[in-house]
Image (tube, rainbow, N blue to C red; front, side, top):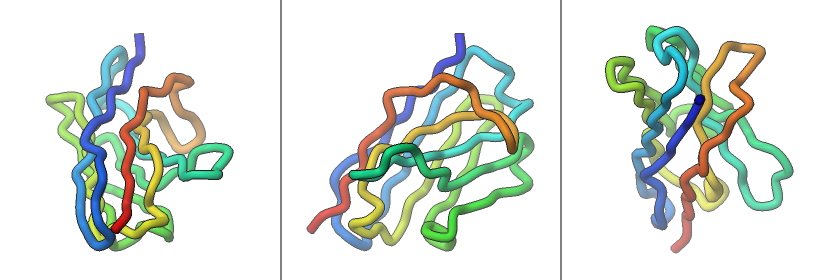
Length: 119
């Protein structure tokens, strides 16, 4: 079955960096876009923060993370990454990966990985 497992979160000071990882299974990873979402405190749903196409040649970012986050993928390992830099307290939340196309995702979510930005 479809599965996502995120890791790499932690407690970091403002201005710091983390590298999040996502291992996916249960589907043909190379054929879909990879996406990172986050759910911040008080948010009802999840915010899409970054997308990378199946071949990795195009990326897209939310305005709030543009220039600070970098999404990447290694298709041979069914793994995706989110490098998060110059972290701000408002980046605090749980980060999730998923996959699909522009107008759909898999209806399965992993446990996420928690990022806390605090001095």
